[in-house]
Length: 99
Image: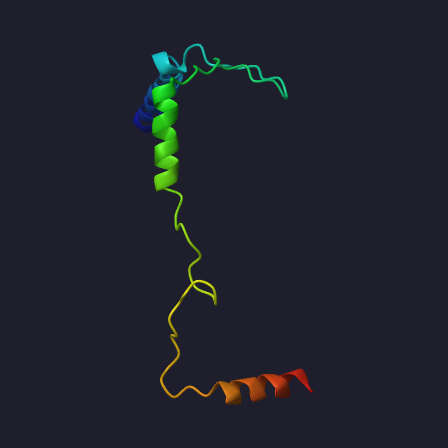
């Protein structure tokens, strides 16, 4: 009997916490009904010229490499081991092609 009352009281407490969790101020006023293809939220504020300039500068800094890395035109150094025989590699490639 005591166990049943204990679990019933625990259930009521958990239910109350769950229901009161929906009463938080950040949960109030949010959109509950949605329309497909229609944005129902607040309209965005326009950015100032200074904010646009700062964003453009950050984008340039995050843009990555400014020139081609590697490849024949990239000026990459030769990373093959000394004594590498490219003729053997070419011959092996020809053998795999079947010609």
